[in-house]
Image 1 (cartoon, rainbow, N blue to C red):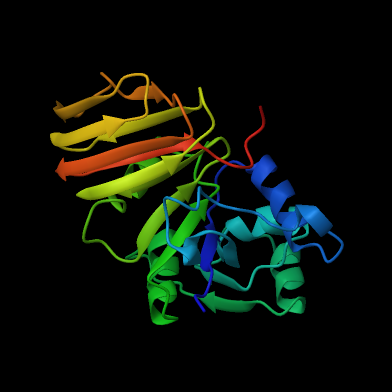
Image 2 (cartoon, rainbow, N blue to C red):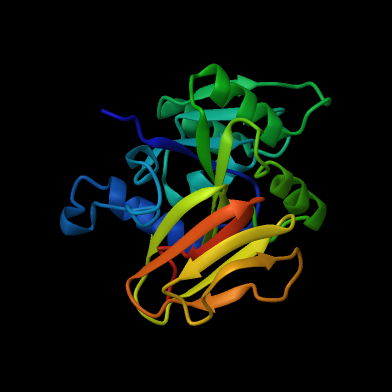
Length: 237
């Protein structure tokens, strides 16, 4: 049985809709709302479908504390986490890993600890609304070859990397999705308003946004790699 992939919270804007869905998902009285699917099952392995343990990189622990969601691990130099939040997480059983060195930022420290704990990937949340340079730096972690593998859980969209191969995205008709080429990318696309075979998508804003025409969008990446963004299951209409 696969272990659910951890969900790492950074110190960006509080992702209100995601936090509310997490509270419902983790509540013992959640009933039919207990299930929280992170992405369409056709797109990712089972281990990525439901959120696993909640991790916090430094001030990300404040967001979880305010939402009443205990972190399994809090890691960083701890200069941004509030004392009352850290105390609460500790009382709830969190492992607190203080890493005071300034050679790496708190995201990098958290990713190091995830690898040490045997996790090959994680979802990352609360990365929006902060410093642009930090968000751009986070984007470099999505490149092929970097470990652990990151996928982004935004307030409105999920973002993940597509490498060469066939990928199927199950979406309701007229749902918006975006393909963002990080380098010249050769692909074929079916099931979208703007489909095509063996065309090049260049880095930039042209041809990014698209709409599903049915329930299945097939993306075949033949050369290069790109980012796929689609509406998060918890996003508000």
